[in-house]
Structures are given as C-alpha cells and as structure tokens.
Amino acid sequence: MEVVELDFKYSDVGVWKEALSSYESRIESLNKPELVSLDKFYRNGLPRLLHDRDPNPYLTTSELSQLMKWKLSRGKWRPRLLDFVSSLDDSVVKSASEKAFKSLPDISKAVKELTVLKGVGPATASAVLAAYAPDIAPFMSDEERQWRWLLVAQRITL
Image (cartoon, rainbow, N blue to C red; front, side, top):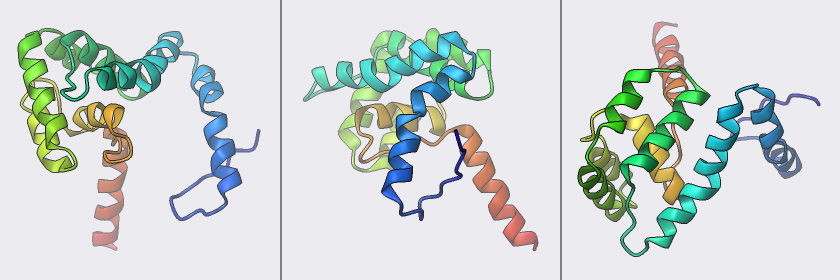
C-alpha cells in the first residue's frame, strides 16, 4: 500500500476516501491490541452513548478514563494523567462535561469547562468534544499541537 502524505489542501476525494478506508488496518498494524478496542469505543461506542443522553449529554469518569487510555495509547504514554482522571468524582465529571457540551459551538468555552478536571488538558478536552460533535470540534492531539508549535517557531527564526 502506497503511503500518501495528505494535507487539508489536497483535493482528490478518492485519495481521502482510500486513506479513511485504510484507517482500521493502520490502527491494527501498530501492534497495540488494546488500542484496537479502545479506538472502536472512541469512534463508535462513546459517540452513541453521548447522543443517547441528548438533550443533556454528559461523560462519566469511567468513559473519560477509557478515552484517556485511547488518547495515551495513540501517543506518548503518561500514566499519571490516567491516574488523575480515574480518581475524579463522577458528579464532577458529569457536571463539567454537561457544561462543556452546552457551550458548543463555542469550542474555546467548552474546552475551558473540561480543563477544570485534573488531568484534562486541551488535547483531551478536544477528544471529548470531537466524540460528541466532530463536525464542530476537531480532535487536536498533543503531538499535533507540538508539531504546529515547532513549525511556527521555525518560521519565526528563519
């Protein structure tokens, strides 16, 4: 399979569809067995759970812990973050997430509502919001944010 680097300016819809159709096999090829099931939870199970709770969607501590495992499995493993979110009281997670979802489409406000939770930074907050409203809130991984910062810094020094 040919690997094509895509950016958002790339306009060949067929290439985008092919990349999307190969997503699951790419996840499986990473040889992280837990990631496969966590990814299915994040992309299928969690959005369904959240939408089943409409018009007042919320997240539980258990669901936030699963989301954190998914996020960390995809990038740098930081177990303290998982410890922090797993120890949060369910009522606090429910309240913060309800406020965040009600804040949409104001992504900045929604992220602020979630980052009051210990262990939840902007990247995790964006993952929570994207699970519920991917058309409004994109997931921004820590790694992506790091690369963007490096690119901006590189432009400044050139």
